[in-house]
Length: 130
Image (spheres, rainbow, N blue to C red):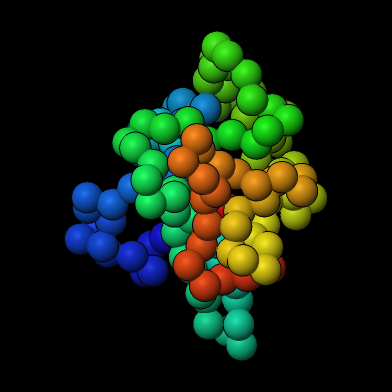
């Protein structure tokens, strides 16, 4: 979703929301995470916005929902387990990860947040997040 929506220059020096509970390769490239973005197809045009952490978030802050907050962090899932269990597909297929009317990223009814506040898209509301 990010290709074509953002250039490398657009992303440099910017805080983003990254799922890091992954390891392995995607289409031959090493990957250690997945950048979350809101997206919508509107009359054939793809609209994409990064899900951004709150303004006072710090590099490396943990993203959580209140009901799943745990210490210590779980071990990363292997690429094989992610694919076998269709982890990401189950989340996306169920439309469990979306934005609300304020652009806040919501998973199963709960806001994605850091200790500094909620994570959100700037303008995209009521759309899927991948």
